Image 1 (cartoon, helix red, strand yellow):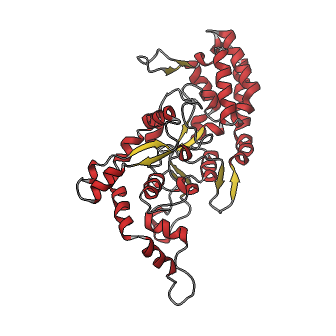
Image 2 (cartoon, rainbow, N blue to C red; image 1 turned 180 degrees about the vertical axis):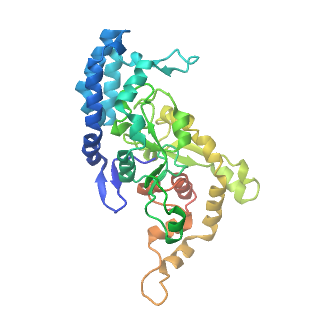
Image 3 (cartoon, rainbow, N blue to C red; image 1 turned 135 degrees about the vertical axis):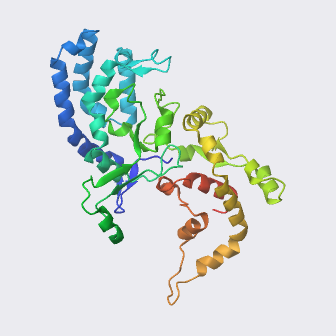
Length: 355
C-alpha cells in the first residue's frame, strides 16, 4: 500500500526498483526473442486476419525490450498505442463468455510465446520476489505474501525432510498482472506489470480493464499517501461509554484530502473488497482503543526510561515501543512488511495512541 520504488533487501541494503530491471530482462530475453522470431516465420497460425497479426508480431519483436523493461507509464502508453492500431482486439474478445470477455486463441499463443507459465515457477520469479522483499499484499494489506528457501531448515525438521526431492525455493503468493495478461499477454512477463499479491486479490481483480488514471498501481502511485482508514468520533465515544457494541462500529476508508481522488478510492475499494475486509478485523481496532487507555503519555514515558537489567542500555527506542504497543509496524515505510499494518497505524493515529 506504499509506493514500491525503493526496496530494503533482506540484507538491509536499500536499492532502487529500477536496479532489478536489467538482470531480469537479461534472464528472460533470449528464449522470448527466439520464440517470437520463429512465430514470425510460421505462417499457418496466422491465416485469419493474417496481415494484422504479422504486423503485430513484428511490432512485438521491435518493442520487446520496452515492453519487458518499461515503467508503468511506458507500458500503459504502449497499450494505448496498440489499441489505436487494432492489435489488442486480436488478443481479447470482449463479447465472449457472456460479455465477461475471454482471451482469444491468438492471445493465448502470444502468452505462450512470452512464457509466463514457465516463468511463474522459475528461479527468476523467486529471485524477483526475494529482491522485492514484500511480505504483505500491496493491494489489500490483509494477507501475507512470502517466499522461502526450503534448504534452510531448523534442526528438528532435518529428519522430516531427509531424502526429499523438491525445489528448495517456494513462493507463497501469486504474481498479479496490473494490466491483465488475458487482455495484454505481451505484458505477462513485464517486470513493472508483475505485482506480488495474495490469491484473493489476484482472483478478484481478474480481467478488469485497469489503467493508471482511475486505479492505483503499486509501482506508480502511493495508496498510503492518498487514503486512510477511519472510524467516526461518535462511534468511538459511544463504544468507550459502553453505549455501542464494537461490532456496530463501521470502519471506513477516506481520502486524506477532502473530496480528492474519490473515484480512485471507490474503484480500489470495489476491486479488492477493502471495506468488507476491514469489517472483519474490528477486534484489532477494539484492542487499539483499549490500549489507548492503558498506554497514556505517562506510561509511555515510564517504558521509554526502562533499562535492560544489569545494563545502562534502554529497553525501548521510541519506534520499538510504538511497534510493541501496536503489535504491528508503526512507520509508513514498513507498511508492506506485515498484514493490517496500514489499518492499525491509521486508527492508532486517530485515537492518539500513535503520535
